Length: 232
Image (cartoon, rainbow, N blue to C red; front, side, top):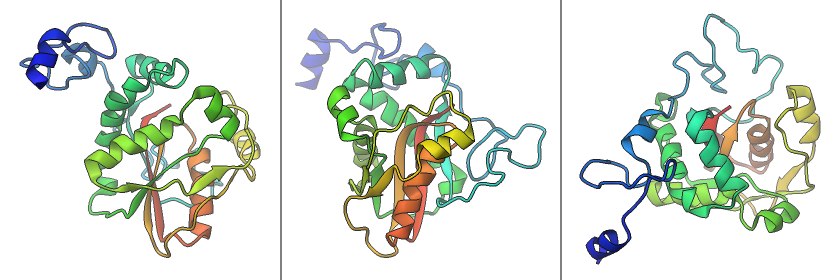
């Protein structure tokens, strides 16, 4: 049945639209050329927030920051084709991109900082109900679902957004913190001592993920780590 479906409805690259050849393209969502254009995270980065650290010894993003999560790991850089895919996913409402973007995020799980960690559940970063109704879905929830299919973990919607915050893009860190003050609250109880994996599409300073982790840790979680598709 799958062979007939491929014959009559051949797969195309989610990024460039070129027809994919299963015998050539290892990933049935992105062609070889588009896969090659995806840049891995910076080799030299902060061990906690993944901020690029080329030629510096103290992370400027972590300075003065109180982290409630152990680590933030992106799958790739928020550049080029990946940036376009994420924007199509979020704002173009192309939910079919859950697969290639979720699989890019899966790359983060092979990072040495997550090696040996066993998670009890995946928690997506929530959208405010008004924004979710406007967008018709929460991109972080779809990415968490895709990741759960690989990791065989439950997705827990443990958090809620208490008010509609302004988009974080364009804000410096101080404004990001102010924008997120009291923005998240517990929606469902967290198992005492649970090891949780937070999921979002993009991270820049990590303030959104850290605000979510703060609520989860206060609720009794033992550890919170975070993975994203990309780092801006």
